[in-house]
Length: 429
Image (cartoon, rainbow, N blue to C red):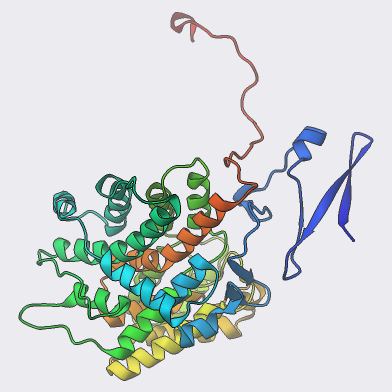
């Protein structure tokens, strides 16, 4: 039986349908609201507004659930690889061994970057942030890799997906090495996705990089946990820009720019900066906790709380295990981890944090994992972008294939001046 609600406006009653998702989520369909009533809804930050119907990712913030195409993220992080998870997100199903091999071969074939692009990298100022470089270079990919007339639209799209997934990883490592004044390391066909990235980042002619399986597994888990997260800021940007029918590279470039912000992808970097500040202040977390609880102090603890999760972020539980495993296996003592554990202990016991749902989120531990791998601080958000790429691609693909697709064009409630007559400049007092 179809559900609906009734809305009364100026003595008239209107009936709006209620849509029910496969996990029982309910939404009021207001797509005809303005046409029927002349009204729009106002929802700053879109916290209560659904922009689409999607079959990619399900998350429940109250219960701490995150699934990709129905698969719990915990199981994927434990048993899957990033490439396999990327295939799942983009194609809807886990690949067979043959499909995964074919997909991996495509990624290998497209892993090199056009040699002319190196000049662009080298001409960026040394102080340029890697995220700004990455967004620019992704947008430029359309010029270096134009569509070929002998390919069908489906073939061209699949090649673009593989090209992005493979080359963004290469470009990220390239930008890092050029910024350090080091020679570029090319991808190796004998290495898998994560191991290849680490080798491109850290190989040296005088000291070959030793690939540690524990580090590779940790990087796979990190990227899997960041692969998609429903309609977050950067994904919404990809869908919005893509709705104007620009090419895929421009839409992904918009997502990278949105992810750059400290309230989104830059949060893991902010966590390390906060922990470093606590360490510099003697390592005592109490003064910082007190400041976070003071409503008159703008200071906030980074890595705590989430816009959607009202309980422990399921990704944080996994990332904490990964963090412990990496530090133990590498036999590295990180004083920042001790500070992080003290903060976590406060957060799970203090009534203020519990009442305000300020549990540790994935950024709280992921920064320490990246730090243990040797990833520099200004590359943290780039690492997030590589992980989120399959989600952006799958969301873009779904929006393009949506038969109900429309140009995204939000409305507003105008609160400015009423009509005024123009006054010539000499008559203005």
